[in-house]
Image 1: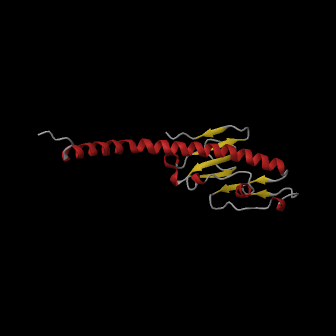
Image 2 (image 1 turned 135 degrees about the horizontal axis):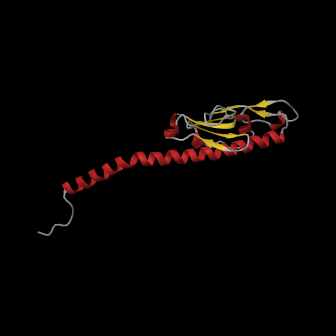
Image 3 (image 1 turned 180 degrees about the horizontal axis):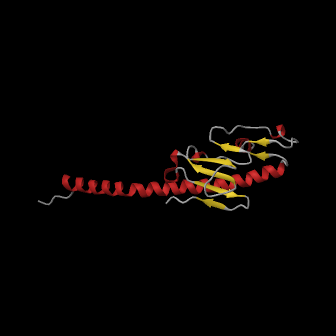
Length: 156
């Protein structure tokens, strides 16, 4: 008898081995995904700092203060603040004024702020902290100081 094909036992064994390998590789893949989102967040942190500096240069006497969350980014009319000095605006106002686009992939993963607290930076200008959905970066922070240097808290 010359049967071509696989027996049920052989197919079950192969599927079991593949499931076991997938189970072993899942934490590594999740770590790579967390690293990718953290890299995107750090890039956004640098862009946010640049946008903050440009905004404050375009509107002297105006400072950016506060925290960004994905649900508080309104639209705005730039002429509403034109000519006003000593005015404080929120980071969400800065983003709403099209100086910067908030990446929707970071929703629920990171919180960005101006002058926020970060354990690795004594005088941070802008900072970010990992939220609940940031995986291994939950509670970890990164910040940019007044000289433009970025400091990152390690995940170890």
